[in-house]
Image (cartoon, rainbow, N blue to C red; front, top):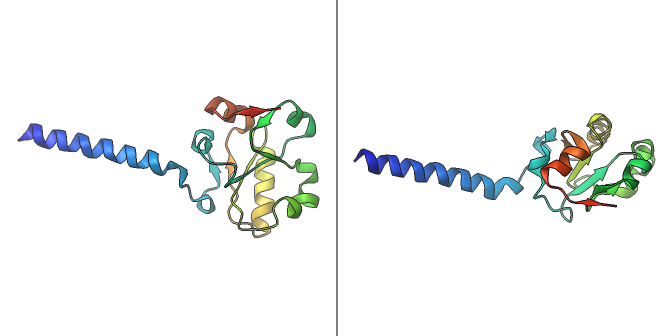
Length: 134
C-alpha cells in the first residue's frame, strides 16, 4: 500500500513540473518587474516586443534575434513610433540592467502595460540560449 501511495506521489510531482514547464510561456508580464533570461527563451518575438536599449555600437556587435533597437538616448523621442499601442507586450534589455530599468520605469509611468526588464542583460540572455544576430 505504501508503495502505491509513493508511486502516486511521484506521478503527481512529475505532472506538476510538466504542467509548469508547459505553461512557462504564459507569463503575465503585467505582474512582473523583471524576468530571468531563461524565462524568456521560449517567448516568441512575434508576440512580444523585445526592445534593446543599448547604444548603436553595442547593437552593431550583436543583438538578440527578433529584437527592436531603441537606444536609451533616443527612447523618449521614438517610443511612440516603436510601440504605439500601450497594451503591446514588451520586454526591455540592455547590457546589464540599469538602462533597461530606466526604460521600463519610463514606459510604466506613461501607462504602458507592465514592462519587465530581463535580468542580467544581453550576455545573460545569450548564455540562457537566446539566438544572436548581427
